[in-house]
Image 1: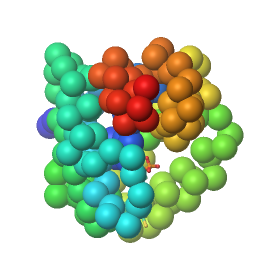
Image 2 (image 1 turned 135 degrees about the vertical axis):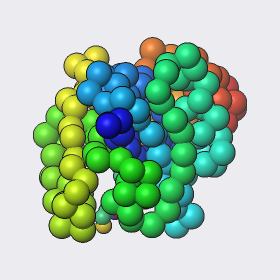
Image 3 (image 1 turned 120 degrees about the vertical axis):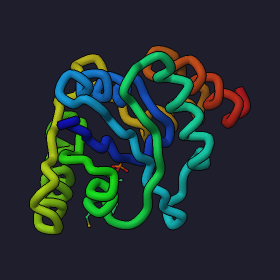
Length: 160
Ligand code: PNS
């Protein structure tokens, strides 16, 4: 039986930390579906289409990864895609409380879907899409934290 995991998130934009988690997740699962939450209520820098494009570009050539969007409950989407697990990256202590809450709520909603955490690679432990956007907004050099195409788009978006 094929083991599929959903790697959900906002990916606004995708970072090297996300790519690291996805690649390592492929050692545990046969297929990973990277799924962007389509949430019109949440303000984002890039549209869902732009985020999908950046994900596609940055993981070109990596087998067994798919990209998709979803709305509604994550566990419902996971079931619909026949995924047995949700994959999440965990950085330092700050992520723990939210991730713990999310995982327990998802387990309460559907006991068939497990959450698997991978510790973020040490290199990426202090990076996040939000802090990268903040630095890029003011012209900070974030070239080694995101794929080249994402760096380019951030520069254009912020007028550098
Ligand atoms: O990268 P993010 O923004 O931290 O990802 C959060 C995400 C998309 C995983 C989470 O908000 C989510 O799963 N939303 C869908 C609605 C849902 O199922 N929420 C959890 C149970 S209430």
